[in-house]
Amino acid sequence: MHSRALLEVNHAVRRPVEAELTATHDSDAGYFDMKRRFGHAVIAITAGLALLAPAPSQTVTNIRRGAVLDPSFANHGVRELPGESAFTAYGTVTRRGDLLVSGGSGVQVLNDEGDAGKAFGRVGSLKLPPAKGREFQLSDFTIDRQGRLLVVGDSFFSESENPSPFLENGARAFRPGVVRILRFLPDGDLDASFGRGGVVETDLGLPAPLGTDGKLLGPHPSVQATGVAADPQGRIVVTGSAVVRLGEACEHDSFAATSVEAGFVARFISSGTPDLDFGEDGRVGGRDLSENALGAEAIGEPVVGPRGGITYESLGVYACERWRSHFGIAQLTPNGHNRKTFGRGGAIVGPFRALADGSHGAVFALAEEPRNEKDPVRARVLRIAPDGKLDRSFGRDGQTRVRLGPSFGTILNSLAVDRRGRVLVGGTLQARKGTSIVLMRVSARGRWETKFGPHGRVATPVRYLTQFGASDLFFGRRGRLVTVHQYAEETKGRSGLVVARYLLR
Image (tube, rainbow, N blue to C red; front, side, top):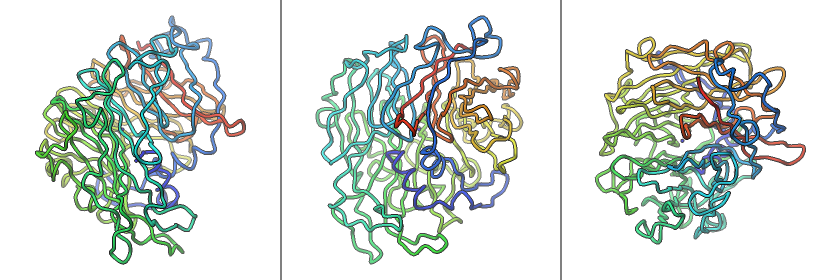
């Protein structure tokens, strides 16, 4: 589940040492992980692309390996979508089976064969109307129960409108901007019943950031969205971060001020107005770190339960306050209160990389375990019951572990749950011969399926696949699994997305 890319770049630039910091806790020990700040934004820049054809042995007749590329989709199961360089990759499927994917400011449409699709009245790409600000950056999208498309992002204003100071690297401490939500009807028209002509643009009632002297820095706030979800009651949940003030950099030999942010969760009713039954005027957080159980600077990956409870993930931490600002996951009750019975003290602390919705209100979470460069890659898949406790019937005491061989460039960072309750784990595998899309599977009872491909994983070679880059997993029509990854061929200036579709055993 910022423009997520912008937030990650911002954190990567201003806090390059976070990956070396460790925050000690109990069994769910949290540490400052490299995923979003350092991995997505810095390492991704060094990657390049040249797709390899799928191995000849990967045919439909060899589906006993667990998963094979779907030969009926695009080029032997893989589609390359050139586009702008970005640090996100996500997708979803429409009711009629079209795929919507994005890694930047637009939404690309693919049909069932992997060609340019016609979803929402557009062929190949959904054009978004211009924002009031100077620039619009897409953060996430989803399909609601009525088949309408919800798009969320940020409308940025000119930096000259807010006197944001410069950091040591020459970048601005923050960008003035507000949240922008659009809703499209299934025929592609903007939904006139939503906001103003299908668009809601809001600062969530948040003020502009405060300077070191305690005075407001300009007329605009600095609010960025990270994700969007639609709940069963038709309400819209948006997550993100807001810059609240300038603070200390907390880095060795660094004297420049840095922006201090606070994560938020906002909820809107179907018409696009704030849901006043949720939090404070429809919003939880956005003003101070203490407003959420994790003390998160940024909140993302909202998963909404059948009764309206919201599970969220911390995307950012403030290094100066390591005693209360953590990576991890937490929950809000349907009315916007922190769920104190969730995990330990209202949160499960740790380097979580993905969340996925399970059945009957359960939530799956993926966490990577700390390791050195030469250690195997280990990750935990947790199943959290509707009451906020680990589901002891899953794996060992509510969790199970999967592992891959040692590699600095390997990362597991996406989840999907099939109709039988099995959990697909996805990411990028780095080996001597190059990079691959990697898939693993955990049974509905929490057992790592070691016969799901050789050595318990299915790998699809993709040369120069972005290391540590974002990825997404979701199911298309007839239970076929779709993966979305990033690529960037630096030497030729090419970048975009790799979309692959698989047939599962």
